[in-house]
Image (cartoon, protein in one colour):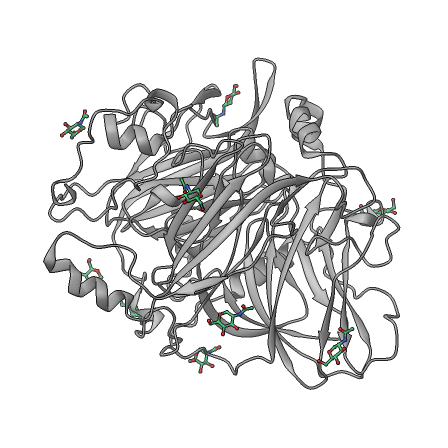
Length: 566
Ligand SMILES: *[C@@H]1O[C@H](CO)[C@@H](O)[C@H](O)[C@H]1NC(C)=O
Ligand SMILES: *[C@@H]1O[C@H](CO)[C@@H](O)[C@H](O)[C@H]1NC(C)=O
Ligand SMILES: *[C@@H]1O[C@H](CO)[C@@H](O)[C@H](O)[C@H]1NC(C)=O
Ligand SMILES: *[C@@H]1O[C@H](CO)[C@@H](O)[C@H](O)[C@H]1NC(C)=O
Ligand SMILES: *[C@@H]1O[C@H](CO)[C@@H](O)[C@H](O)[C@H]1NC(C)=O
Ligand SMILES: *[C@@H]1O[C@H](CO)[C@@H](O)[C@H](O)[C@H]1NC(C)=O
Ligand SMILES: *[C@@H]1O[C@H](CO)[C@@H](O)[C@H](O)[C@H]1NC(C)=O
Ligand SMILES: *[C@@H]1O[C@H](CO)[C@@H](O)[C@H](O)[C@H]1NC(C)=O
Ligand SMILES: *[C@@H]1O[C@H](CO)[C@@H](O)[C@H](O)[C@H]1NC(C)=O
């Protein structure tokens, strides 16, 4: 990784320059060059199967940034399909042009390259990136993102001896192309579950399908930070380490109240940091990730297994795998979720305490009630939100919004943000999010699988979980005191999850199920947050290297750019 300190941009107007220089005082530019290929020899398990690798690596390389750094990722698409990357949990402040989902960017065509430039503005924490279109995530292409504190901001725990990134996820034996093609088949679309669980791209210890297994080498007496993400397609898992407790410290950019845990549930798309102290006898210990809502007596390969190796150990792992909670005991999971609280006194990206953002008394501007379910549309099995199954237009919404107010691509607020009894239909659902308003979003899950939802551009204040239908009385059960802020939240089967978000980030933002087949088959919408005040325009203009496609395949007339950017 090459790093330099020069200022990339020169701004035309004097007033902002001083502000920008201050903001950039310690920020650096990080330049990355990624070559994306489909590798048929790597084979994480003993199957012939293509894997998406970055510079030959699976998982892809770590992005190691500090708060406010500018990350330039020049992506060479050496695959045979269009490609995009998204940066799960990186908020892209004022810059949804870099978000890398189908609604914000034209795909990077095979044989071409395109450079993302994004800033890790005012963020810290553990995140990951992944390829966002064409079902590519099922083939890999994901990797860790760390955003570390600036030197002047204290981390609320002693410096660990070392850090390990641990990307855990379910995996199909079949190629992603075959799995993708089978998404048109109801049996697969509605019922298929993956085959095995990988840890950092490696199969379970002791499993005959595995060519290798993941092992972390630790020194007895030392404490380590594990940054654990669920990069899978479908399954939540419970993570635990034989004979070791974990101390939860961070999730998706929020330092949590530090709690000691025997095991931790991680849902699809989520990231956590835990501290683990090597305080046991010199030996090797199992690290286990077992799926929720799956009977692992019947699906034994769906237990991810790695090894925590003490450097002075002379013994192999032994004994039974450490027991976790009953995978069907959702009360355990809900109770744990409710115990994850924001540490209101820990500093994070900014020196001021996180508790500055106190939601106990905010005025809500909007409430969305989003119910997820399935529906057959014609012959197609689809996943729906409020009975709308998103159909991806050829033209990214963001371009259509910027150049022609959406004309010909989408109609703003054409679909309901409250659950209504209506026939299921395809639609391009783009809804208004009121700029600088507080929004309450209630996710309801009518399916019998775990779901998880993510909003680009913002953090969710996770205020409540409950069973059955949500009603306004459910608000009495909210935690408005110290809800944790994160970007992906789980929704239990037959239950609801409520979050708040402060819509201070203008842009076109993807709101999606993180479960790959749900997302791929239509469970998403976009929230358009528009700042009507042009003075000064806060949102970034399109990047100079903007890709064009759909109705903009040939360059459009000059943009109706906000006044101060022109
Ligand atoms: C990440 O960056 C920090 C700050 O530049 C550096 O101290 C650290 O060693 C880096 N970590 C890795 C794994 O590259
Ligand atoms: C493609 O890569 C070249 C060479 O590194 C670089 O100069 C160019 O800016 C890249 N193109 C885009 C669109 O990012
Ligand atoms: C919260 O952070 C503060 C400040 O760093 C730390 O001293 C305290 O132990 C943390 N509180 C909890 C409950 O983890
Ligand atoms: C799990 O599967 C085993 C073996 O088929 C069976 O005996 C057991 O009852 C199942 N457990 C649950 C909770 O379904
Ligand atoms: C583990 O770490 C120790 C000390 O850092 C080193 O000497 C040893 O070679 C490592 N063992 C493995 C298996 O990597
Ligand atoms: C809470 O909000 C209300 C209305 O916005 C306001 O009148 C009241 O003073 C606030 N209470 C506190 C304790 O901040
Ligand atoms: C948040 O503000 C309310 C008043 O609106 C106050 O009662 C409460 O103690 C504050 N919470 C924190 C964590 O400071
Ligand atoms: C888009 O809408 C805005 C406000 O409604 C209007 O001022 C502008 O002229 C429209 N632009 C185009 C290209 O239609
Ligand atoms: C969704 O549409 C189906 C018909 O396709 C209908 O039976 C069902 O009641 C609708 N559900 C909602 C929540 O609108």
